[in-house]
Image (cartoon, rainbow, N blue to C red):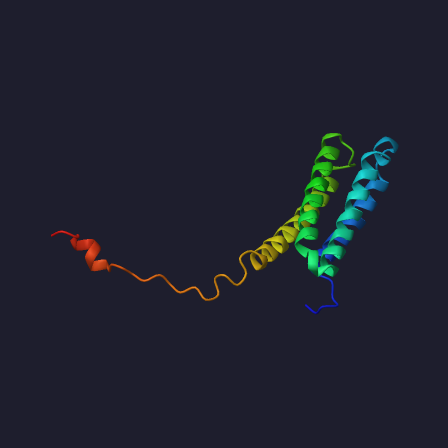
Length: 145
């Protein structure tokens, strides 16, 4: 991946936003302007956080952590929409929740990679393996014969 190319998670988040926009159009009026607005706003925030995390390298771990939380909140809203029967069919809900889970898995993986890089970086670089004090023969014969 080159430095100019956006990560795959951004494309997944944009597809999720477009799917949510299409589904919310079919909501009944009551849900369109309440839950639908929340879903659209949350999906847009996820896309923005992806872009921000990619571009602001100095605070990347912070933005990716925010992204993970935002995806979890979107999944919660989708679950609520399913319980309220906002979706025209269960397959609509299922398609959106699977897409949100995919974005969430990508965000979690991104966060784990960043956390590993930042945590204790350089401390294990010159560490040597511990010296073995006893061999296998010692443990099978016993210390005192």
